[in-house]
Image 1 (cartoon, helix red, strand yellow):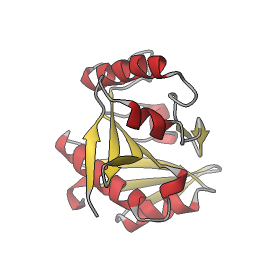
Image 2: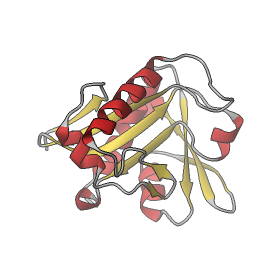
Image 3: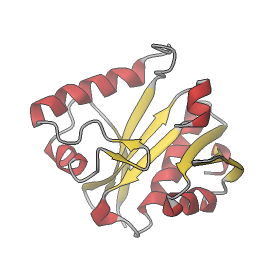
Image 4: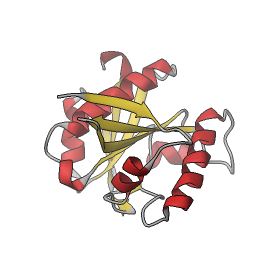
Length: 170
């Protein structure tokens, strides 16, 4: 399988745009803010996301710098990952360091586990030794993915599994 993790750029094109239109706007807490936008709006969205990756400060008390990635398989985007560079108190409860989504047409092919492992490597490169994922309790597939990547379950809240992953194992 020919796979590659690519960092979002301000110049991402139609293939990424079309991929984003396959993802729901909000599924299990993963927010796809490019769902349903025009291609022109998508270009502005890419520019904003690229800027976020370069920031170093927290904005509005909760917006931390974040890098967005695309998982390409056989030359087409099949997954999206977000890596937050730091955590706030609210992100420790809901959000974590890493969020990821796979196109509905590409699920159950191992891409989720692969994408999470690649994102953990990126986190390690940013000096994050322990990465947090918070997963809705009813998202059994994502819980299995995180645990199969040697996740350590800290606790289960009313609505989420709180799982830590050692980035050095990725």
